[in-house]
Amino acid sequence: MIASSELILNPDGSVYHLNLKPEHIAKDIIFVGDQNRVEKITKHFSNIEFSQQKREFKTQTGIYKGKRITVISTGIGPDNIDIVMNELDALVNIDLETREIKEELTSLNIVRFGTSGSLQANVPCDSIVMSLYGLGLDNMLRFYCIDEISETAMEDAFIKQTNWDMRKGRPYVIKGSEILEKRLESDTIFKGFTGTAGGFYGPQGRVLRMPIQDPELNNKMDKFEFEGIKMTNLEMETGAIYGLGKLLGHQCLSLNAIIANRATGTFSEDPYKAVDALILYALDKLVE
Image 1 (cartoon, rainbow, N blue to C red):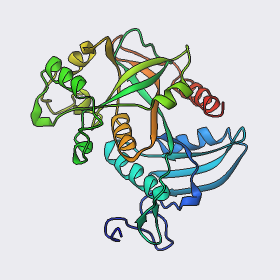
Image 2 (cartoon, one colour; image 1 turned 180 degrees about the horizontal axis):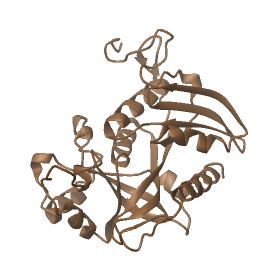
Image 3 (tube, one colour; image 1 turned 135 degrees about the horizontal axis):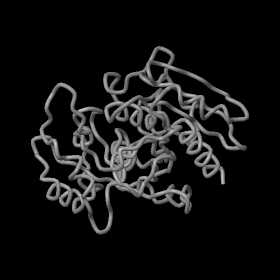
């Protein structure tokens, strides 16, 4: 039995941070970072059967073209992903009354709808990038046993090509779901290799008042290549989602609307339109 100090429940029996019970979520789940983006997706639903919010975690479950879908805001960063992924898994794979792991496990389909900046000139603003791999530059996933699921050769190449300072921890690379890749792909979107940073400023090469350990890291990442694969974009959640999803047996894939191109120094003229295009594209793919 899992101790109450390890799996914390609210007085109503819901999981601690998300404030959800098993019946509140669908098998197909969409992640967004911003809580205000939840309703930008669910406004397209024919009905919303459940709505809940605690802290930055807003959840709505409803029906889109006959399919039951849940939309959850995760907030920003790998640390929040650790909370959301573990609590969602607990909802479907742990009996919350007995605190025992279920004999028959459930696999969720989790798709992240995000915004990101492109690192390559040929991936323009307003395009959509599907992340085939997530490169984690944070250390969160290293607290789990990931050696059997990580792409070690790609990690080694990244460390060598960027002269990575190992005092920051070993980067990890995790492959996204091939099942969801086939379900969501088309000729109109780019397939990419997505970096996941542990912060927005220094970890992504931004300098305000503090110097950073490697001012050239962004340029090195732009030039990184492994067997024809280059980094396409940089954000803050994908690597963690892929790693925890694979460890827990869930199918996970990340889609990003590109609203900036750091290689060309351009920004989308209408980032909201780019996000809306991603939402409608992915929703329709999910119900095919």
